[in-house]
Length: 79
Image (cartoon, rainbow, N blue to C red; front, side, top):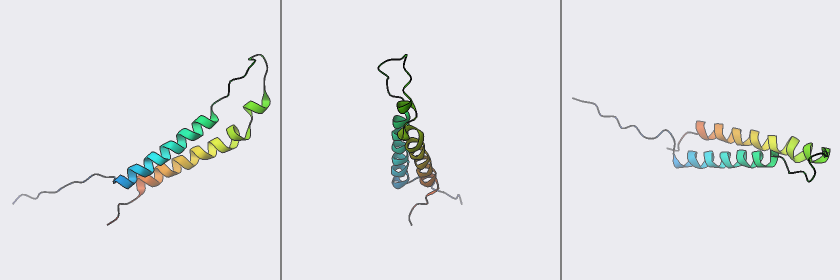
């Protein structure tokens, strides 16, 4: 007698939703970290380069997004 095993998907719809949310948070962090265009390239504007958004908030968002991705991968399906 032959044993038949059905193998379902490793991830459920909920996992994919969490992965999408994590990817969006990472993308938002990358966008916030990207540089602003200076009006005069010969002038160095320290406030633009070392702003709180680029130095603190954007990396925190990227780390939160990576945490969400890890959570999405390890989340067990209900039932």
